[in-house]
Every structure is written in structure tokens, then in C-alpha cells.
Length: 293
Image (cartoon, rainbow, N blue to C red; front, side):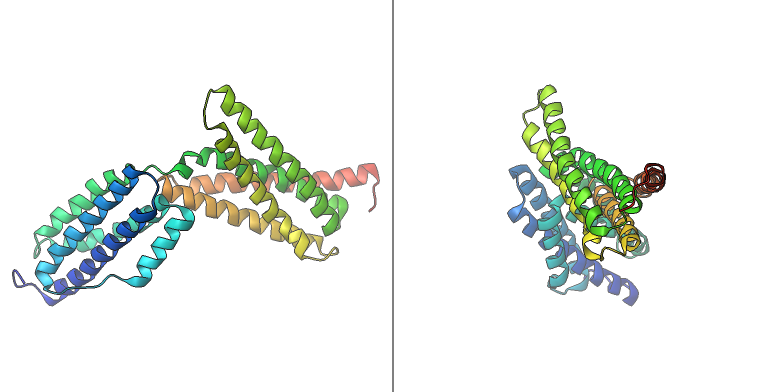
């Protein structure tokens, strides 16, 4: 150990030391399967910096540590499923809570100020260099997701009162949803082609997949509940809408450093508002047309 430090500071340093080593291993593992040579190099640089921080802490503790296997597994799986940009930015968000710790250590460990500055500036700059393909098409996914949520939520809410049968509602929603999926995807393709983009097919694929997945999730409650419990299916569908919006908004807020609350409430209020209006439209339409199913 290079100098005498308090027991409380030493305990903090040990925790920081293991955290730096674990993150170094995570970056290294993600770099092995990340696409793009520049992304791989950036992740390896991040890994090397975390390892350098680990060595600084080790000079104080004199202890050789092992990475936290569960944390390594968690972020490696997240990187494979949701993309490496989301995984590493989510991991780095955890370090925001460590700033107070650095302040406590500054008096006893001068190097902590240097590490803090590097964490805030250099590593943040390196994270911004990551260029993941799926994030280039977030706009296309948002287009498909938003359109499906607004259009299908409204349609299903209107059908719920007009038809009052979960199987008929699901059938109607499925026909509309699949037709709208192809319509939205083809519109995105033509729009991209008109702009002279070479990725028109890929762009429309992201839009179509986002739309279709949303359609399936929204119709699912009407397939789970029996035909008489159409109101249960409606409330379950609205719950699914909120969950989809929350999950996707959280994903983009982490991966693209966007605000969560404002985007979430905007999408949620629009989707639920359209559903409420459409539900009353279904009531009026059924009464006006005198249809009894």
C-alpha cells in the first residue's frame, strides 16, 4: 500500500477496484461480438482504461481481485439481446452514483480526482463514438410503434363496445393490423427511396417488424380472455400499451441519452386518449346503426 489511509476509505477503494475490473471484463467480452471494427476498438479502449483504474486502486489495497461473474453475465446478455450501446450506457449510468464517493476519497487518495475526470470526460466521449446499426433505425421503429399503438389501440377500443366479443375483436384487429403493417412498411420503403437512400429495404423492415410485434401484443389479451370478458381484455390491452411505451421509451432514453418522462407521457396520453375517444365512438356507432351482435 502506498500510504496509510483510513479503514472506511480502504473499504470504498476495494469496492471501486472490483467494479473497475468487472467493467473492464464486460467491455472486453462485448468487444468480441460487437459489429464494426471501430466499435470493437472503442470498447477495447474502454476496457483498457477500466483496467488502468483497477491497477491504481490495487496499488492502495495490495489485493488481486476477480470480476463479478453475475454482473459480467448480466451485461453481456443485455448487449446480445438489446444491443451493446444500451448495455454499456446502462452500466455507465451506475457510475453517476459514484461521484460522491470520489469526493470522499480525494483527501486521502489524490488519484481519485484524476479517475473521476477521466470517467466524466474521456469515457463519455468514447461512448459517444459507438455506432450501432439498430440505433440508426430507431426513427423507423418509432414510426411503426407509434402508428400501431395509436391506430390499433383506437380500433380495438372501438371494436370492444361495438362487437362485445373477444374473438370477433381479435379477428377484426388482426385483419386491420396485418394490412396496416404492410401499408406502413411499404410507405416507409417508398419514402426512403424517394430520398435516394440505399437502406430503404432495411428501414422499412424495422418499421414493419415494430408494427407487427405491437399488433400481436395488443391483440393477445383478446385471445386470452373468453368471449364474454371483453372489458377485461380492453383493460389488459391498455396495460400492455403502457408497458410497451415504458419499455421502448426507457430503451431509447438510455441508448440515445433522451429524456424519459416527457416522451413517455406524450406517447401514453396520445395512445390512451385515442382509445378513450374510439371507445365512445363505438358506443355511438352501435346505437346509431342499431347493430346488435
